[in-house]
Length: 390
Image (cartoon, rainbow, N blue to C red; front, side, top):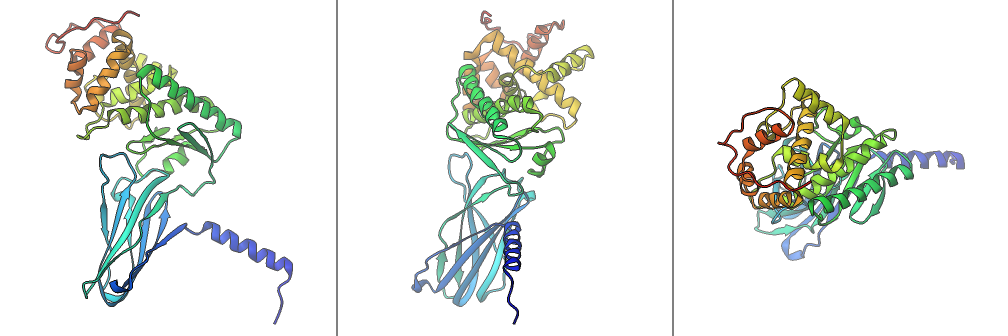
């Protein structure tokens, strides 16, 4: 029998470590089942980011297992925990190994770092039942070796770039939170994780349904943000981070029982306002004005175009509209508007309640502020509030 040399042993150990590193991460949980139940259960889970989570279960009993159900709760903003279920398919037997696969393409997907609590329940032909302990799986993007820093409520995660790169982005996050509080009077609750991807391709690879022009995303209902910031595009990141943090803060402040959200022009307008001036947005707005191709405020209440040029116009207009509202009517009115949306008001009713005009009236007044000569439509403008002095 040949003995392995120390060199060969080291090589084999290295190979084993590499193999283990590339295998899917499996988190297992087992429950303590009383002997009287007659059913023994164990479970494990595998994450295949961003496509699926596979929940595995093993059940054994003296009588045939007849039912295996997965119960899971996604950790997201809600007024109550929503327990979802998955039914494992199997042939009844005294020993069952099966699984339930959560296909993200069928549900819209989860963001990186999302947390899911889960447990299994089982029944057998003798009427016995059992339940595993509750376990948690993190839907981590394990394609990259993440580093992280934390300051206040913000944890910033990145995998490419120096510590100085990350610290600069963290400073932008802290400045953004301060501006959000000063300008909009909003102090978000809880903590937020900001994932910094090294390219738009990497960012879009973390999502199943990303827009072609998307450079950052705030996952509504989660305290999670993802942004593409290349190491040579730090200036973009310094603007994108307060932009996405504004979405996070505003979504929290306007969350309501009715599931009613904000019109995209207001949501994006506030984010771009906090982000600061953008030559791209301004150029797109100027082009639309010069070509008489402005999109109406009411049309901007629908999702923005997937065409980059049209999307830029939508962002430029949204920033201009929100700037108009803040400069003419003041920050207190905007705070009041967000509170009305928090109560579940419709787009037009919220504007009427706070400003006295609906979206069409806003469209008329905003275009006039740009120097576009439009006859005032009194059907849309009900009351003209006094402007706040500059």
